[in-house]
Length: 236
Image 1 (spheres, rainbow, N blue to C red):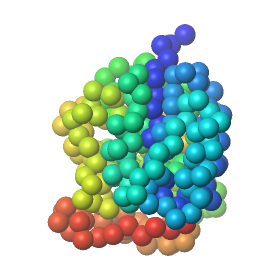
Image 2 (cartoon, rainbow, N blue to C red):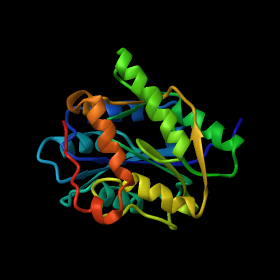
Image 3 (tube, rainbow, N blue to C red):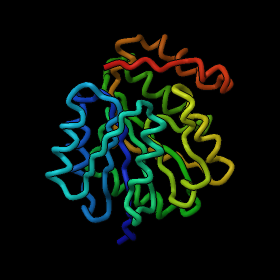
Image 4 (cartoon, one colour):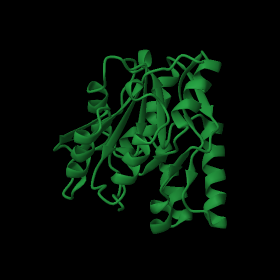
């Protein structure tokens, strides 16, 4: 049996009352020893029931902890959430609050890391929860492009020793994922794990349109001085 690494899952959550229960139900249902993983939910600047939902799971489950911050910004929430992780953590996963892990995911990840000891930071294939022809096409496109250009996008997996080498740029509200990946590339080896156990909401694609979201995502490659002037529209 492979050594069971300790995983910390950091989940920033802003106005996520509609999906946070499903996300945390998936975390609770992970088929992995409860004393070898935790979830740190960072509610930031919500004006709905996000904090109350997170606290309920905190009170009912020993390995889920909920915090609140009045400052908005996913980068701030991720950086601060990392500081609240258990000293035991060996790998941290930064995950959106509309991403749903299937029960076998941590087992798969642990086995993958056992087989790839040089892995330092990376991501996985992600399935959009839109199973139409267009949705399936964009699932394929997203995963292919992420792997090709070695970026972090919807789930970020970082080895503990690398977390002190780089942090999310809190001045950015767009493109921060790509910039974080570029910073980590100076210190560790990128990996891309294929799995069917990570599902994410297609709500932004469905509400904005797939083609428009393509061009929005392409903006992540813009220089920092441009990205600082761009906001990230919250869609719920």
